[in-house]
Picture 1 (cartoon, rainbow, N blue to C red):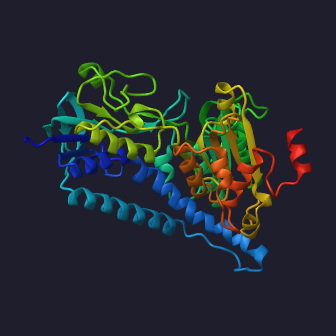
Picture 2 (cartoon, rainbow, N blue to C red):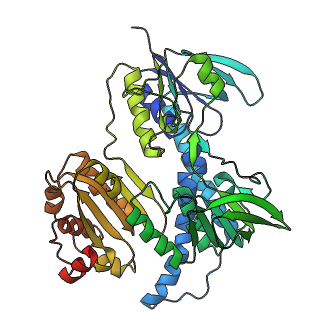
Picture 3 (tube, rainbow, N blue to C red):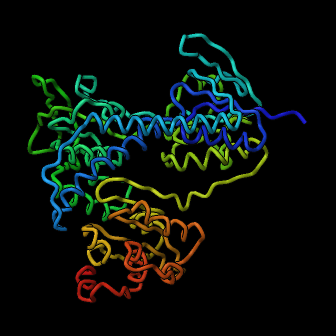
Length: 471
């Protein structure tokens, strides 16, 4: 039998998983990557931001310790050491991915790849030399880049994107962040902990516009308590030099401009697509990204596309799943992913995590919905940990008991979401979630209480407070 050859363009989360899975299935695999394997997520996104969030979280813990009778004096921040540790984590993980690819006999080609036909990639190496690599099946995984809205002054010194914000020499005294999505808010938490005066400007009516509005507004209140200023329903008109600083001109605000040290552009991400290539080879696209079938095959037979470049959920764990599925389909399987239970996590303080529909989206589809809530202020473990902010919210369809969405704002929300994701993915109903015996005392109990509250029978919410909430 002729050996299948698979060529993967892009070594981010989706790409390297696609390469490994294809190799596991017996294919001869080549992976083309212009930068570092691991992609944006590992090198300039998920991992480095979480490393800084974890480091700066100890400053919160330090303050919290005083309430427990522990005082360690005044903390000091070694920012260079913090950044050095972040870089060491990245090196370790990148080295690990390289080792995995080597152990699976994946041939890695360093250089910028460009699709030139349904079976060929032209690769330009770091020295500028061009070479053509061909295969029987192609998997495209070129990821996404920072969106750049048409704001005059974005090219001024002192205006950063998220990559640059991860490698500055010292925290700015003041920082204006353009965009109140997950990227902007995670940086807001990092730099506010480090002492920066942070202002977030979001053009939508509330931060995290894709998430449940009740959860987003509760997070906004919590961030405001820690000193982060948030302006919603506002746009940036222009950025101008102001001595060594920047003047940011705002639209729709009483204060028409702000003077800040740095500006961070965090207005979202867009698929990284070469329009000339798309036109030349005939790949179909929409405003969201490359068009693919439910098997992740593009408009060109035997060419697959995954991850951020096809739009949808721009999340590393979705790219992992799509990479594995595309590799299997490229080699003869019929793997179709179910996106019903995709977990979404935002590592602010407190964290936000959700799966399924928001309450607003559920009401657009279903004539009626039922909602259960349980605040963490009534959870014993949350009080023990000094984490009173937040709640668990469960949205259901009342007739069938189908769980339409679960939303968490609170401590370790990203870890707590696994239970809800599992129940929804297994097509469980609200009675299944209610029947789970949760260990005590744990934060996890809040999910069971919120599920009970759908039928107004949560044990640890007083009837009076429930009536006040309903009113």
